[in-house]
Amino acid sequence: MERVPEHMERRESQLERADRNFVELLQGARVAVTGVQVLFAFLLTVPFSPGFSRLDLADRWLFYVALVGAAIASICYIAPAAQHRVLFRQGRKETLVRRSNFYGILGALALAVSMTTATMLVIDYLFGVVVAWVTAGVIAALALWTWFGQPALNRANGNGQDGKAVPSSSSSRDD
Image (cartoon, rainbow, N blue to C red; front, top):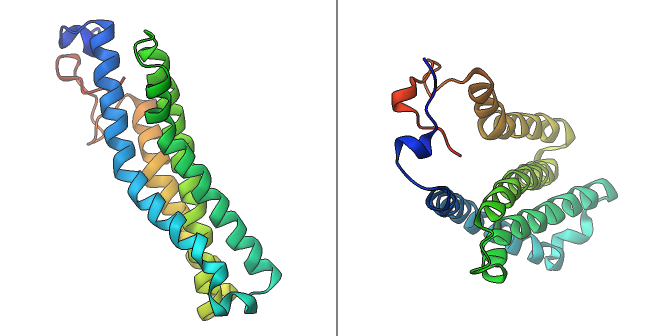
């Protein structure tokens, strides 16, 4: 059975679809941006705490990666709203939707790196390098699977949430 594009099922124009997609992307970014900003703010204060001077060079590099990852994630999650302001009423919503999707994926990758390295830094400080590496590996694998691997597998297989093929009449594809 031939799959009917979602915008035709919804009877929405290209512009209406772009508007809906952009709103959905912004909603997703709102979920992540608060957590990213809290992490980023916390990381900005860490070097000023008394215990920071006791970190060895490897831990300082972990901190560097965590901080830069949080900064990149913040930039990526804020970019769609900032670009929307600059491009307001320029008729470039579809371009903005594509860019926002890219920034969302890049922001999630940067956030995964930041969360993994920040956790690794703290675990190394508390329990040592072996526990830190194992914990970081589990966190990285979990983030990569839940945020990217599983959705990519569903996308490649054309499957819905339950792994069964989505019938064309009830498609819930994100554009």
